[in-house]
Image 1 (cartoon, one colour):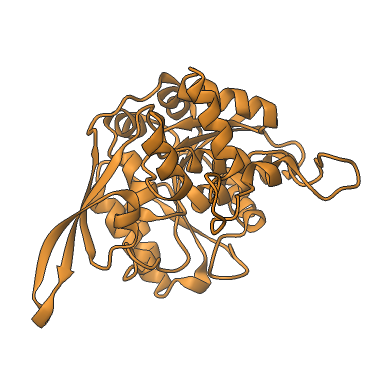
Image 2 (cartoon, one colour):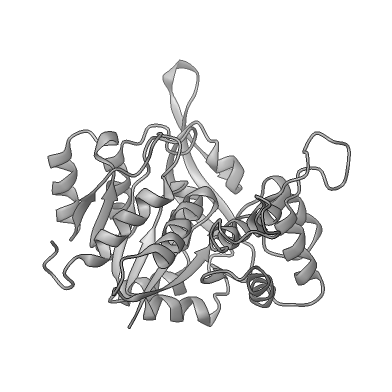
Amino acid sequence: MVERFTGFGGGHGLYATLRALNYLKNNGAQGRDAIDITAVVGVSDDGGSSGRLRKNYPIVPPGDLRMALAALCPLGSHNVIPGVDYTIEDLVQYRFDPVVSSDLAGHAVGNILLAALWNQGFSTQEGLSILGSMLNIQGKVLPASTQPTVISAQVQVVGEGSESHVEEVVGQVAVAVTVGEVLSISIDPPAPIVCADVVRAIEQADHLIFGPGSWFTSVVPHLLISDIYSAIKTSKAHKVLVVNLVPQSGETSTFAPIDYLKSWRELVPEIPLDVVVADPQFVSGHARFEHMAGEMGGVVQWGTLSHSPQSHDPVLLADAFDKVRAMKRGTTWQ
């Protein structure tokens, strides 16, 4: 029997989730169900290499999609040349020096490969499938939409004299680094085209994983796409939220871990959470945190998830996911 995981997000957060699932797929306990992995990746990035390519070509931003492909590359034992410590992931992730005066400055190799495929007439999904096959990825990478989207936020900003006002901030990078409180998020186009494979992956999933990652610019935007939201709402899969370790400078600089639960409840009150994965060393008020998770329909899976506050460790996160999948299904979780 195949156990299906679908992860949502982008950037380094989704990379950690996919890498953990890749590790679990290849190093999981014997006799357990096989694992099928699908990534649903945001297409709102407008900064750096992705922003430049998106501006110059009619394509979705490739950076977060490249990161997802890299996360699902064969693990470290698959070296390009025997005896040489260099993997195919190293090549895909290689970024040309951004300070050198060159048209390639700052571009990642994987971004260029995807742009080249799309520029030859392959669809977004076809280009990802071709590069994924070349890389022998251990899963499937899908765009949240086949159209690039633009994120906008209503942000409460404190001005002179401690008086606050609301401003509209446009663009993923601008929202990510905003110094105000994000009140709401929207995307343009408001109902972008979603490929059938994304809806199918949600419908067939046993586990839907949200986070970790930039909350308003990587995780939440998926929930604003009506076709994805509807599929998640009706899915019988277990909904799993991986809480960020520490506040992120900018959009969630004032967030405590419990604020991610509050935000989820405010944004998508009709979608319960079955499991909240969190590291106890970064959460204050464990009982209160567990109570709120319970109010939202779920339980907390505590576990050491990191060796440093900067990022989740994929191996430790894999152990947490293994415990999640070992829980009794249905309404009773153990």
